[in-house]
Length: 369
Ligand code: GLA
Image 1 (tube, rainbow, N blue to C red):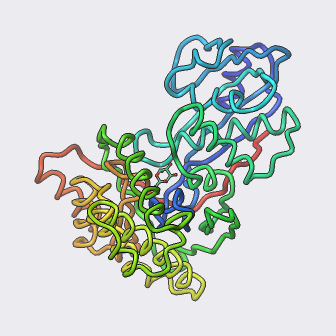
Image 2 (cartoon, rainbow, N blue to C red):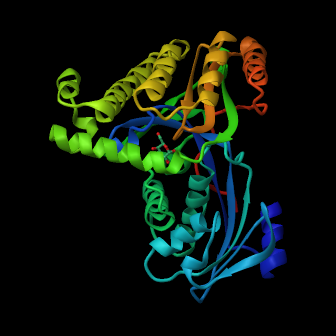
């Protein structure tokens, strides 16, 4: 394996363990995780591989095949910059100053909103869990990754991305209750129904993304306080709640409450073997994210509209928004026409050509060696 060769070349010995953790797409349940709601992501076939050995001291030596150069030697966690922060966030979050030699290799398309950062956290956390006998379950590994991102990296994300990376199973979607953290996987037999989920990577990432994410969370928390509930998950009378709110908070609540219902409805359809019927829910989710939650952008909207015009059964933005990727549910024989429609719509506007990928539900974190 390329990553163990790089490890040996840099550190002069074999890695003690090698873990792989995938990125994700979210089928439905957007901006619901930090509202104690429901999500339905699945792991993608691209991820991060971490080759790791423990050390006797607290130093982290770190190299990435995607960042050529000498390995970084990190003796104080705060020294770490950029991508290295997602790695170092793991030991920084654990007790006891645990050092390690780490080599990273990754193939998650960068900037596509497919959670390469969660993959990095979960791969590294899985390796530390094994090497230092931490006894963490896959769910606890996801929580450790989230804590590293919240407390060390400073991004107030929910649990969805790390959970998808740690818990997904091949051929299935992950239905997670973000309050109880109860989860189950549900078969997502795309090929058996002649379907494909096409990822449309807009190849844009608008800079406002991080600030707006924190702002949406704050809107939700303040609306929940006004409504006297612990989280928006608890709103049972939507009309009554909307009557008590105004402006942005009203719109955010409208999205979160209806999005949770859409997740449950979609799960119901999958259980009933009616995967071909889920398109309308995907479309409704997109409109709600665009108009009520206001986290879409022209590139995502055009991708979704063109995909539907080109014959997709449904489409929506996926992930945090403001760029990144959309997903489209497409019959096999329509894939070419959907891609052509999106490509043409982008070309017409003089935008950079989008990238198309096929999302096959993949296995969550696993030990490779
Ligand atoms: C990002 C966050 C997730 C989730 C999504 C929106 O991917 O990391 O926790 O909130 O946005 O659904």
